[in-house]
Image 1 (spheres, rainbow, N blue to C red):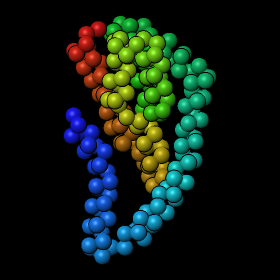
Image 2 (image 1 turned 180 degrees about the horizontal axis):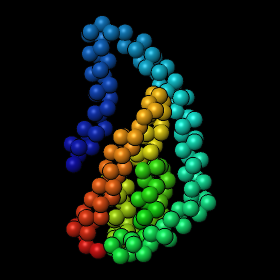
Image 3 (image 1 turned 90 degrees about the horizontal axis):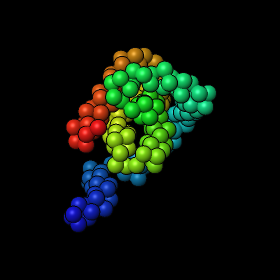
Length: 177
């Protein structure tokens, strides 16, 4: 275990040092390249801000308006029929949209039901098994100007659905219901 801690402590500085040494040996102006990359990073960050703000405002409106609670109440009978806890459904809906909001929901579920409860384990597994599909599409595709993202959206949401189903199956198999 100590060796893993030691490796994790030094791996990033070693990689950075290796890149700098390799670039210097190849006669690449490493400092100038670093500064140029920093400039590009700042430009990308500024181009992402409008998309990020729009997405975060939309999420806030969806939650604050009660639309999410209304949607979950409609789904509750079907969720109970298949044995999916309705308490975790908002997490499954929000996770593809916002990682921060999903992390907040996961934290609330764990503090309410406990980390060793079925809901706590399912929420934790789901948090790690799905991705922020809409965030990725909105921010990154928007930043580089990709307008047609229909296929990427379908694949991303399908991967999220598979992650949700896999979370349920894995938690039930490993820990029971």
